Image 1 (cartoon, each protein chain N blue to C red):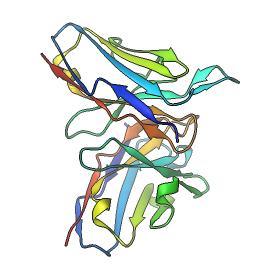
Image 2: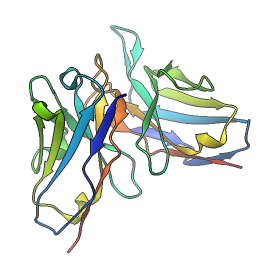
Image 3: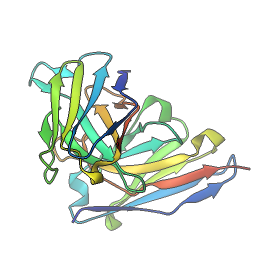
Amino acid sequence: DIVMTQSPDSLAVSLGERATINCKSSQSVLYSSNNKNYLVWYQHKPGQPPKLLIYWASTRESGVPDRFSGSGSGTDFTLTISGLQAEDVAVYYCQQHYSAPLTFGGGTKVEIK
Amino acid sequence: QVQLVQSGSELKKPGASVKVSCKASGYTFTRHAINWVRQAPGQGPEWMGWINTNTGNPTYAQDFTRRFVFSLDTSVSTAYLQISSLKAEDTAVYYCARGQEIAVEIFDSWGQGTLVTVSS
């Protein structure tokens, strides 16, 4: 199984500042035949279902604010929230779908400082 | 708009069975796979598998091959998860999640979750 490791476990960021979340996979999730990274980011707010933010490592889902961006390739990925808003308080998860079983990172909790 | 509405919380005794439903609306049910994801207390999500809503063919993750069954009733756009011989460690929130049309493993809409508690 591909192990997804997120860091940090939690971070507190001031409103308007940048939040950076890292995700590392135990093996590459870059599919060479189509040059796509099989890496997804979700946002999970308390009492709500998870929400798709980013797929193919850097493609923003329709309706997701452009302050959310994804980057990285191979085994190392980053989710950046540029200009944290109060409504961004949540747990963020990365997930690989390169190979079964699909696996998630342990999550990063983002709070307001 | 796309909605997945799941059945309510369940409290079950060890050894019992439970069936969780996931009713879809706002799109053509048979054009998107339904995945099932488990989240135990304090843990990250765990993918259980998916069901092809066009053929009814299920695919289970290795840890979910023995007591777990995915099924459909396409006449009411509903997917089901049945768990038999419940154990305390099955206590978790269970989510259904719709796969994208071209990538079934990218979950673009989720149900609200169903808490299953297994306790004597």
